[in-house]
Image (spheres, rainbow, N blue to C red):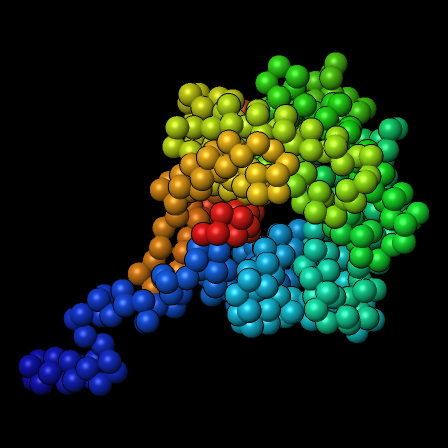
Length: 406
């Protein structure tokens, strides 16, 4: 009876196409979910689509929420689409806009009165969709996000608060969340005088980060600055947080190279941004590990508990690669970008037997203040959860891959 059972079972498996050699079948590039013949940029893009079939749930969400991670990844994907003309990628991006913005141009789950700079970032993906479709609802949504920036609370010198609930605070993150969108929106929709006012306001954000967050000794940037000096994480003299966090600096570098795409060549602030970028590049290569990657707390690689971290590394590689490709920084930094990219492949990339690409060793989240309270200490940064395929890593990895033609 047992012989008959196992014989029947084996016949069933053979009929379904299973065999003892199924492992070999999955290694055939024609049978993979994501082909290994593609460039890494498209492989990661298709892997993300496979992982998150619903684009509104990209950040391991259980229900849709308008947030920055969607915009980061989808904008990177749009650049892959433009290079490959893979309509599966475009359809995925459009699905996000279609679900999150109704026919009246209202953004699902978005609340302007929160004045949260993080909410601006997904506007990048909507700019992509408007570029291709000219749908009026997308234009209305974009105008809403621009209106937030017009009314965003600021420090006494005009620096955007990171959020309304974080009064008087400027974080490195916020410059990336808002300013590439702000610059592209101004270049796309606004006429000369109005656009120049927007560009001037953008330059102020970078000027203030340089004035307050940059450490003149190392050239590295502290994660946050509190003008009021009231926050528990803030130094009572300088208002600065304690450490140089990898991803915080990564956000800032990407902001520099992306805003330069849209800032007019004759704008007075352009040479300043290029100068800031050169200082930035000089500082980050000094703390690059021999593996090519970077540590979670940048300047303390030998300290117990610190680790090589994927999201910040991908952001640095993108910034250096794009900066050299555009001629903003010396060509020598391309070598650092290439070394960093190889470090990502060696240290962080794992490919499943079905071809799905995974990015490991991503810090899942880090911030300052809030509940439970984040004090910005060394122990805080190294003990935040680590996970694979965090969108704050996969998006920059796609962008870095594109810049290096990988």
